[in-house]
Structure formats: structure tokens, C-alpha cells
Image (cartoon, rainbow, N blue to C red):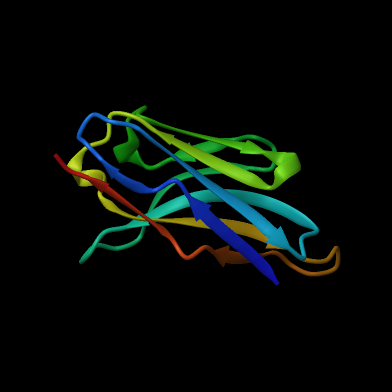
Length: 121
């Protein structure tokens, strides 16, 4: 199996920063992409940021330059640096990985349990 474990969420004041981490472990042959999604109560899950194995990144429109995704390929870890946080960023942030467990297996999508980010004064 493949496990994704997030860390780094918490409570922060508006305008503050947080750094999320997500480490993939288990039976991994290749990671095609890792990224972050978020879901607030009553809202659909939405893309925050994703980075491919080649280093290309993509962000949700609402990010507007405030967040930066990066990765440590050797550690199978992805990071999300979030600056200028707003109350509207309050949500559960979920890590996603597109992973193949064996060379002959197609890639599958795996999810972490999520980490709560709350932006409030």
C-alpha cells in the first residue's frame, strides 16, 4: 500500500503563514505527481497546488501567488508554503499522490487523511 501523511496544519491569524508537509511511504515504484487539495464545509474539494515529477507546478486560481509548492524527490515529500493567509483559506487540506506501486502497474490516486488549517483572529 501507499500512505500519505500530512503535517503542519493549525490555527493562524489572518496575514500569517503556515507550511504543510506530506510524506509518501510504502510500496512506491514511481510518483508521477503530488499535490494539495482543500475542502471547506459545504464546499467541493478544490485543487490548491500540484507538482509533477518533472518539477512543473500548477495552482488553483485563488492562490494568486500566495502559496508555493515544492518537493523533495529523495524523501518522497511535498511541501506547501502558504503566506498571506485569509479566513477564506480555512479548510481541511488533503495531500494527493499519483503513484505506481510496481513498474507494470498503472498509477493510482492516493489521499492522506487531511490536516486542518484555520485562519482566524
